[in-house]
Image 1 (cartoon, rainbow, N blue to C red):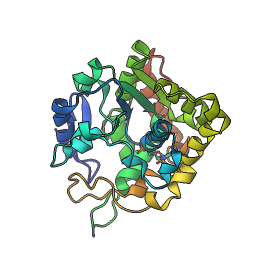
Image 2 (cartoon, helix red, strand yellow):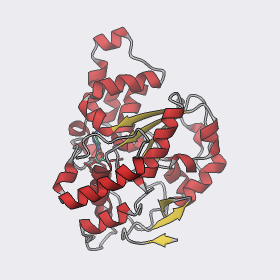
Image 3 (cartoon, rainbow, N blue to C red):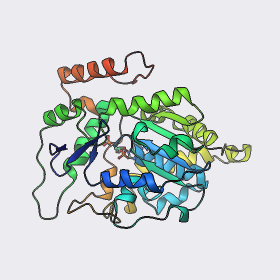
Image 4 (cartoon, rainbow, N blue to C red):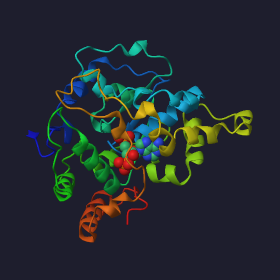
Length: 306
Ligand code: A3P
């Protein structure tokens, strides 16, 4: 079924999750083309969980050259696989430099089996769902078509849809839970990170990521302040102020119809707890009750959730 509640972003249900209509062909095509290797890193998140930040950090850790972020939009540091494959041309993944860094929003159970079975590693970024919804709301109403009037959508309507699982790659709880459970079963396969922990102590998380990626910082790099530089040059304050991240449109390489997504729309305010500016107490309680019900006994909790 097709659902058009999110205005310019029709969603289609596939294997229990709602995919943007224009992306689903890429999700299906990917199965035939992705042959992960042991050096590949897959960056995974539910949309609007801080993927842009994750891409910047992993790129900086991998290259050890965070200055490159001054001239490159983080979205261009690791291609989104399903968007890549949704375009008119089948991309040549083998041409990408090694170690390859891909990103995807595909739920664990919908990933190609080749990813489950191969020794490639996954870094999953999880964000508190109320903040994720607020970010989704602003992102989707910010999408526009040339000459069209700005989109109107009451926030309460977005909450209704999101609670029913109706949002890009939703439901969010199942998405997070699948990766959480896999990270518990196979910690060497999935590193499960939280946006809120990254905000609280970014240097500690950067060190963890580097170790997981098999690229721990040397004593000399620690002495030189490499970790602090990576954190500084990947920060919201730094990236959102760069000209390269303020201009242009995202996704020129594939067909978005007449939809326009601004490169700048990946940077809004980058805060923990912005949901408080949008939710009433009743809305938050209803939302949290869903989380309690779905995450019950899983061990996955959301700090800063109330
Ligand atoms: P907000 O809309 O709450 O500000 P994604 O990259 O998955 O699309 O997620 C976008 C969210 O991450 C936005 O959240 C955006 O502001 C935030 N973000 C982008 N870059 C960031 C960074 N360097 N540090 C922290 N948050 C960042």
